[in-house]
Length: 308
Image (cartoon, rainbow, N blue to C red; front, top):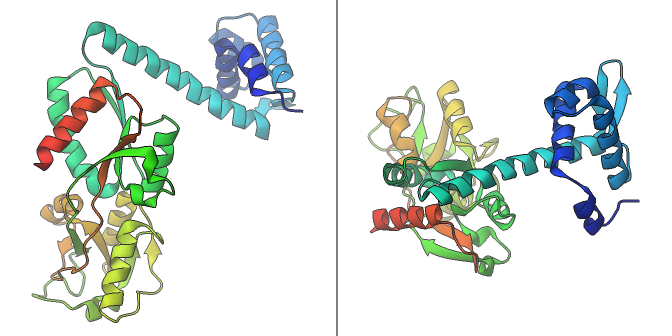
């Protein structure tokens, strides 16, 4: 039977978690003991204590050494997260004590990447010793990471949340969207192209219910056209770009700021169609009622100044 959270908290120690990580890295009790600077009998005892605390074996002995079972892999994954969090804690404390630097974790959706990069460049000019973690993902995933405290802030949309009151938001401008394709696409040299013609192309689109997908669906619906079939769905900027570069028959909608570099370098072309549907503005999002670290406040200042 799985012990209570209070029992786990009172009995589990950081050095034991370091041992689990070393066992996963080396597959050997002897090598893991060396890595965490304890004796092999000490490592054997520590592993027994961990498994006793959790009430279940975490490893199996095989011809290759110690192999984590499914429960062991789960525990090791969280051990690595805790180890990383402690390292980040030290890094942030050091920055505060020295009166500069610190650490910032920020999430961002694809369309907000250019604004984030520009604002971070200005912030790092002011705070050159600042460490920054950037997580690019969907709004739903970023809000989940924000809820868990894994992010200090995010540039995303709270409309995807079932409880947007959990967040404090500062609005940003709308993302102008454009249709892009490989330079070898049949429409690349045209002066104008209609949505009717684009509908016959093969599309790379965002997954269902994501804001940019909803914007594109509205564009086709208001024109009285069926949404393109046999599309490829992805929320990844890099995957979208790679697909367009590989297949000259594909088209996609991308935020203009995101596509600008690829268009400027001749990797993509901006097809001559102007979308009438507007995308929902993204926001600067933080958890409601949570005190922000100084680097997050400074980044918000840079982002809001750039928007005015």
